[in-house]
Length: 315
Ligand SMILES: NC(=O)c1ccc[n+]([C@@H]2O[C@H](COP(=O)([O-])OP(=O)(O)OC[C@H]3O[C@@H](n4cnc5c(N)ncnc54)[C@H](O)[C@@H]3O)[C@@H](O)[C@H]2O)c1
Image (tube, rainbow, N blue to C red; front, side, top):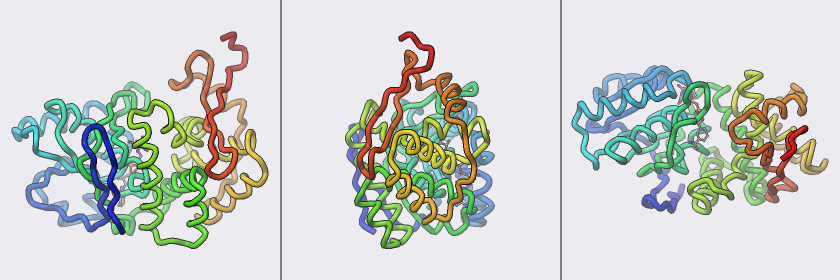
């Protein structure tokens, strides 16, 4: 697969499709699941920091653990670190790299499908804080991203489904990708296509001031479904997209969406009350002045933003 070059104000970087090999000098941030599934090469590697898996570790204490270790090792401004893991490890390693001595390089080595198609590229880094997701953070793009699809061989199926959710989202954002999926491309080709779409959005709006908002398709309702109803992220995003299309889209788009969902063997068999979700949504941090901006697809690749007003809001 051809490498992808991403333009960034902080310095362009490359997404490489290749086997990842641990070098003795690498300083690796990872989690216990990765140590378990990768075995000796990672287990025996000395220069590493290992966290508990998942969101429980995505906090400022973990970031401090990373920077304290780098300080103890006397890391210089030009020495880089490696994020080996899913989006949690990627986001907090990137944040630690961004604040250590005002910024050192880091390499993203995503090991989940979600991290491969989405979180490893674009430079958004951060951690949760006092119950608020990604509350602390900054844009600190990686020095390089290495996509090694061999990691997916040991990824549990429910984690794959998280990635499928984002892949389906990209297919709704981009007609060429939607058509390409019909030809059953390889997983590497699917990931590369998603990353080319993400690259386009990131380059157009590196600091998330407008155009990049399309990437949030399904995420407003999805976030509530994930946090309040315990549905896994990727599936919650799909329910979020389903609700948006049912409310604002047409039958043809809904059928195309269901076709994509079936294509990835996903079953959406729950229903949510949009009014109830909206009540939660207006408590959310992204709502300003009683107005909520929803990403609404009018057709495949034809995306709009709809400003929805809170019921009872006089603003
Ligand atoms: N920065 C961004 O632009 C961006 C975009 C989307 C999501 N995110 C963030 O990403 C996070 C979610 O990422 P995620 O879904 O990768 O979750 P994750 O990092 O928690 O990984 C999911 C689980 O898979 C395990 N795992 C990872 N790779 C494995 C492998 N190869 N084999 C077996 N197990 C493996 C992990 O240990 C973990 O238990 C969230 O915190 C979210 O906020 C960030």
